[in-house]
Image (cartoon, rainbow, N blue to C red):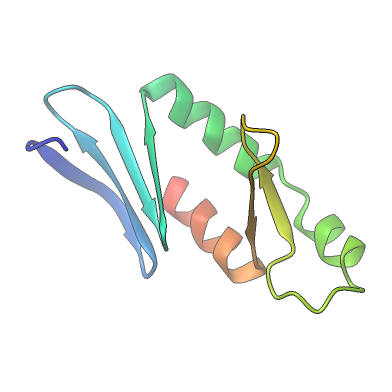
Length: 95
């Protein structure tokens, strides 16, 4: 863990910080922690902003699960799922 980190933005369920020593970003959200360099953070932000929330909410209307909005990862067997309020808060945090 970096010792020279500074919080860039925060919401109820997370925060985005940068280590001023190594210039890496740390995104903590609920029980998830992401580590990014600047390019990776920008790519992740663009990906999250392109998610069609309405599509996923209507597509998965038959399920009883609260979290219906998926975010794919580089691991084909790992998909992160969020509900409407979590994805909205994540976008705010990345904005």
